Image 1 (cartoon, rainbow, N blue to C red):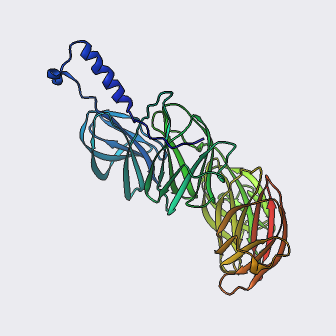
Image 2 (image 1 turned 60 degrees about the vertical axis):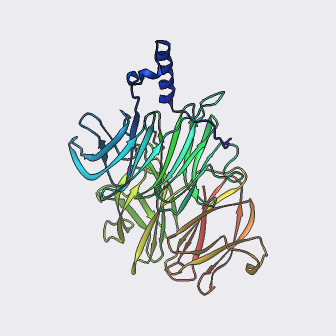
Image 3 (image 1 turned 120 degrees about the horizontal axis):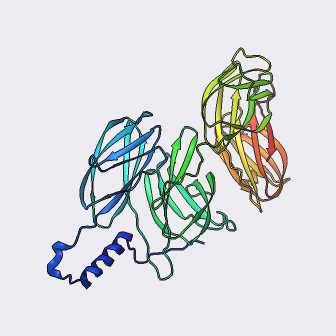
Length: 450
């Protein structure tokens, strides 16, 4: 359960300072002895969210510096108060430091704990300072959450929910515009599911699973763009960096063949001397998830049983620990493209979760309707409008019988007149619009359940 909370905020170092002063007072400390009271200063910790960067560090002096790999927080550096000039450096695989020509300063006050977020690209590093607050109450130290949207998404909502509420009956925990910080929200001590949605909607863009929130913890959730889409990191201000993704975890990858004028295909990753990753995949077929090593991969698609010619080749980046779907669509004699989708594998007890993928190269933007049987299209509103080629849309519906109708957005030409489908609670349905067999319009609609 979440609640609005605005009690007196007290820094942990301030508590130590007050305790120390109390001890000094007992020893004879008075207003005339101010020069004998030490300056307690504050601390600085850096979060490396620079897309495409490796290890990056900040330096205040030769003895005051700290570094962190991409997606991690540096060690905390304790400093006396005052103006702090900061310079930055990168660290290569051999541990050699090289200066980065980015410099700025920060005035650190006594009793301040500060997180410095670095983001952007190595060529254009941006920064944001966030002071870490601690909350004092009569019963327990209340944990706080903060949300930083460093992605290109205009607005994102962060939901921290327990396993009984879900996101549908509650307001977002925090919201943030692109390149901005949300502020802080107080939380109960509990285990929360972390979900990021498109601002103002319930369209889930990232599901990070569950995390436990303990006492005296401040958790910062950072959303940013990576080569495979939106990625979210969790940084704890008190403990070591917590990543929501195990960098060593395999990617679970599925493949959808939407090349309408091709014979069955094989899909290779890089080395053509090894067996194909996906083999003998017919047009319109979906191959279920197979574990793959995360990272950059070169994909080569060939006719089944042959290593030449290449029907399509490109590079993709597989995210560790994620479920992803590779959709390759188009016409072999024309142009073929791909999209790599991040799959949400969480099921909902009282609804069906759906994703619609526009993979028909011969159809431009489309409107998609889910109608109750017999309902005229004119009396229904589209689930999604103007969905472009190789774009997808995720949504949820109650269980029951539906009829799917698809029309072109610009001229209202019918692509699919009526496609009956029965949805059940606690299931995930993927729907794909492809070209008709051999290519061209009007198109072909298929679906699979997982």
